[in-house]
Length: 87
Image 1 (cartoon, rainbow, N blue to C red):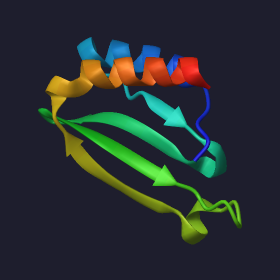
Image 2 (cartoon, helix red, strand yellow):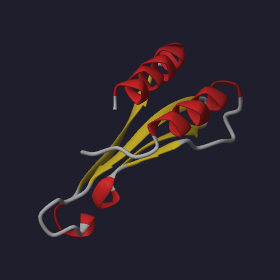
Image 3 (cartoon, rainbow, N blue to C red):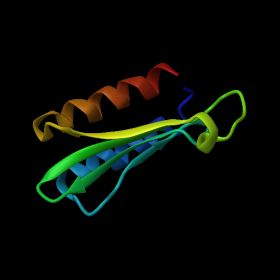
């Protein structure tokens, strides 16, 4: 999955660490995305991996969500910042 605007996403995710009203989303091609969202006292990571063949994520896309350990949010921020420097 090719990701877009990774540096901006890392900044938004950093703000999300202290402001849970935000929903930072890392966009990718074919409508793919990774989105961090607050669900009550929990943080969830939602994802959609779009279909590269038809370009239609509703046709063969894979999506889902899972809860993540909030104590790792700062590490995710650092990881996405590092990723933005390597692309």
